[in-house]
Amino acid sequence: MSKIVLVTGASSGIGKAVATYLQQKGYQVYGTSRNPKNLENFTFELIALDVLDNDSIKAAVKYIIDKSGSLDVLVNNAGMGITGPIEDTPTAEMKAVFDTNLFGAIDVMKAVLPQMRKQKSGTIANVTSIAGYMGLPFRSLYSGSKGALELITEGVSMEVKGFGINVVSIAPGDFATNIAAGRYHTPIFEDSAYKIDYENNLKIIDADVDGGKDPIEMAKVIYKITNTKNPKIHYKVGNPLEKFSIVLKRILPDRIYEKILMNHYKL
Image (cartoon, rainbow, N blue to C red; front, side, top):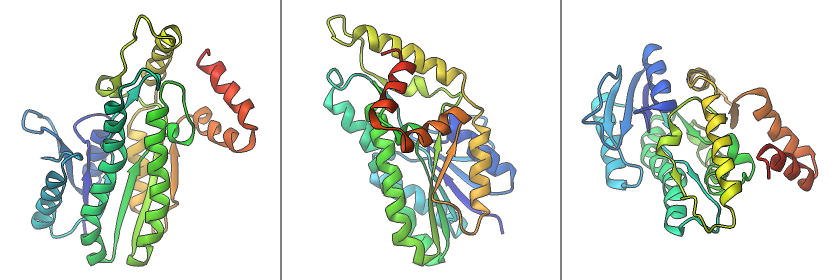
């Protein structure tokens, strides 16, 4: 039977690539967007879901189950980026990124788990980030939100394993998407103590994204996971250097690793 799949944040970027690829593989895919009415040219059904609105989440999940009778895979992809020095970034924006990247993802998991428990099967794939394995300058809030989701994934995996449900994380590195357009950028304040370093780092960050991998690589990994009986808990999808940076963090003294990152970001 064709798997029933929910992909959040599927209007562009990684989410759209994953949803399109899984649809091509014969899955019945429901992608989500906060405002799908004005979006066109999608091979899969695009429905409304806002991860910050629990009623919206429940309505979308109910719609899928009522229409298809089951829900086999959740790709928890919806999220937002944020950049800025901690000192200059408004606390409200800090809370917004955690509400979206962490609590939004948790609320979607909570909405699909009752159906998956009923089925005694299901796969939840939380899209995190390689940035979640390390604190990055001027992206510490993004790193923190994705790192927290990595740990939540580990805990939930153990809680639901007995119901036949697999929970995994997939951490992408830099991918060639329009993520920068939807990212919250703390303004570069003329009187900021971080003005020069932050300005330079924004250029480095954007260059890394522009030179990133094709999002189809994420889609292929997720397809493989959905066809694996006992998948790993953590997957990393990125270039060799990005994945090696996680290994280095495990084996190097903290300050040496910090120095390597500071050299990369010209600090």
